[in-house]
Image (cartoon, rainbow, N blue to C red):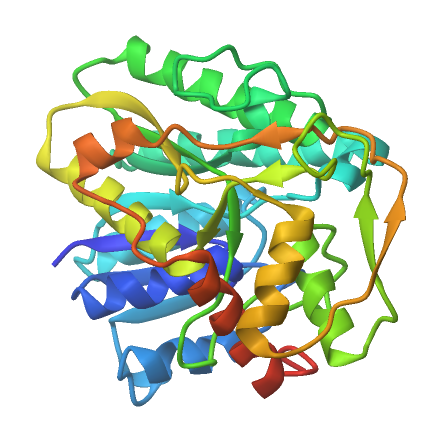
Length: 350
């Protein structure tokens, strides 16, 4: 059975993907610093994957550390070789991801997202592991195209998006340097929300998230008085930003299908959008959340944020055709599953 290394495996998207992979029979190695996540996530992953004791299984091995540290990367790969458990693919979720923060801490974003990824790729080359799934972002498109496909012009409007696009360029360079060796896919996903329907996994809103959905849940829980809506003067039907929201489990399924696609096909580099292809404004999202969960989310209009764009909706036709993947869960399900997680875990993973 293939062994997969997952960086950032206890984060929001990484943890849900771990459950999908474990339940599909893969062995996993997680590397995580736990700076922006909790070690308690591991217990919940084990419960959902029917692992009784994480200390007595080869199905899930965990290393605590930073992916910028080559020593720990070498340790992971060498240990796997010694156990005849060679790593066949790396899924790279780890990194800094707050658009707004990236404007004020650009050096941190370039160091972690770009330099750290180069470290991983160097160690992969050393150990002849040439299958790589990269967690990219629709932020690479900027505001030039409301409904971008993978060939649309990429012109990020913030350092976060710039770092993602730079890694994509590095990956293309790497593939073309050895076109018969590397299998690479980078997934530009849009706005992941929702949670595992069990309520055991979700987005830990106690961290300083800057995306909208954790704040909606904080307001609904009474932890905040109101939601800030950043701008009502955008060129959209109701003046608020329009985004393509996708259920985190659909995103996890997309990562699984992308990896399967790589392992079954010849060396190549592929870029794919993962989204629903449906746009929802901030005010629509608030309304659907309220209706789906019978609660209220008071809001106030604030100024636009630096780096935001008016509208961004995925053209997902290429992912559908290549991966035989399609998002199954609608916005109502996203809101219900997220609210279920938040009600059961009002203090996140504390």
